[in-house]
Length: 345
Ligand SMILES: [Fe+2]
Image (cartoon, rainbow, N blue to C red):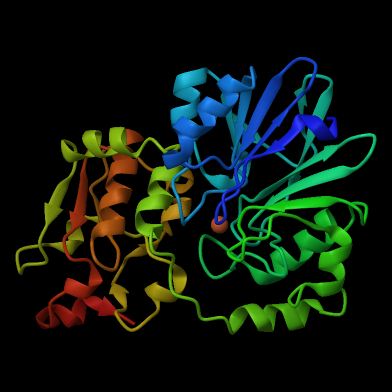
């Protein structure tokens, strides 16, 4: 892909990128944002491009992807990592696969650790290499590793084996930068990234990440389920309103009738609110993948902290064809003290 065919359209916080082949005009958009879909469609139109693919580096927790909307409007195919647990993506991508774009290719590299399904997209051109790293590697930082199956040791390995093995001159476009920076290089991050410069060992990195203690992203409860449905949240919510029940944690709620599925993160499951005895921990981001194996008529009780995330989980399950879904109103924070004997900590 020629340099002039590489057209990043970055905002200050989120950085979707639009890449095009200058001869065929075939184009790809990376990490689109639902609210910016109309703008992106305008860019595609103005530049006379044929949008072929809509790529997401991972299931985002801080914004809703525009992939479903852009697919609907353009017919382009959506792509996510095969380990992302998103069943609505047209192309589940794996390590080493290549996507043709005119005469160019986009190489897929699996870079898990921020989430289990993270991908980095690499474009080799005669003059340089470009890498779209999502949240695996940021400018002088990296994505957090404390939810969505994040794992610091895995992220360290991904960055060192899949990104730092690219040429030092590789230009990196990360998924975010909150300070207004747009690009960096492999050489710069190897030297200046405070978490991932070459002097930082894997053990040091794991320690750094364990001590961050960050709050959950503001839009996580909405964004993750919407992104598991390719950003088509509205449709999902309509379906779900007719297809699951709400249950108050009153004395007549008989837990023994249900398969109890707790969709929080592991640290919440074992945290101060505890979890219902017999509950299975299935963090929301893994739900669609795990639920593939479950009988569709099983009685399910979905649980989270406040009832919101589990409500979104109900939507997801109803889209997958489950017919006996109940949401625990108020979640674990609304569980009555009088029924504390049904809680494990
Ligand atoms: Fe992320």
